[in-house]
Length: 231
Ligand code: ADE
Image (tube, rainbow, N blue to C red; front, side, top):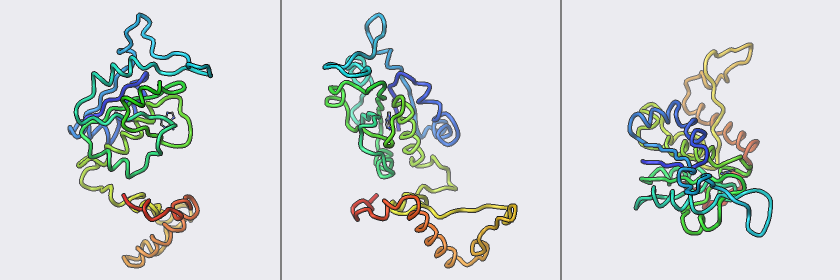
């Protein structure tokens, strides 16, 4: 897979992707990531990328010219153009699975009040939000989406871990609590059942704890309509 990220802050986009699993995925040739400074497509002498809102209103908006030029330079036949924006559809694990099947993702990162709407109408395939809060820019949000997608690419997690056995593989249930050694830490004990070796009982315990945790932290998942259960 190839990923291009167009942003005013290429270093913010790249920093989280240059460590650990995602770094190794790049080194292994599973993914190629390029971050570009939007200013390099601004043609005026001040390299201006933003301007005031037409019709008034607070803040600045990214101008269409540099974004159109960037997409026209970077887009290939199979490219999916994604705008990271709090106005987008919420990003879910099934989106990560879907995007992991693409050959080329091109991220546009909003800043200030966002981007000129002609960019969205003409260039953007998907507007994606990573949550109901507002970040200072879309570079971090793009990195979050990239991380969730790249770890699903074949080989990215190595042989020992499978993305299938984790929260959101069953999208309506969070994972059960998990413990490691020591079995007694300051008098806080690992639940007996996990040390019992009875796989059936351990599975039943995990199911019950997973349900309890989901009720406590994400009761909305238990109310989801059946169609939301599909990956
Ligand atoms: N840019 C700023 N906030 C964002 C969010 N919540 N999701 C995606 N992009 C953003």
